[in-house]
Length: 82
Image 1 (spheres, rainbow, N blue to C red):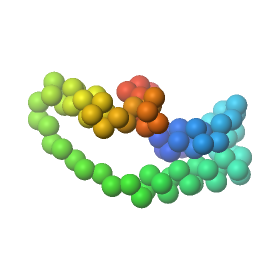
Image 2 (image 1 turned 90 degrees about the horizontal axis):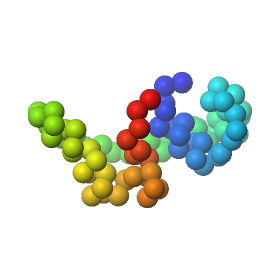
Image 3 (image 1 turned 135 degrees about the vertical axis):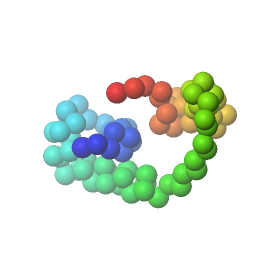
């Protein structure tokens, strides 16, 4: 499974205390996972090319704050790495 965001959305909608592998084997969770995948597939994206590394590094948190996409606001942007 390489759909981390989809999995996080599904887990938020259908909380569980299983490992990811066990959750994916659960038919009810798998249904929520597929619903979340379809939700993501229905979204539209825009791309902004930023050549300066520092500007790029600062642009993501700036956009998240301006658009209120943080996890606390119900969004999915946590700025955590794997």
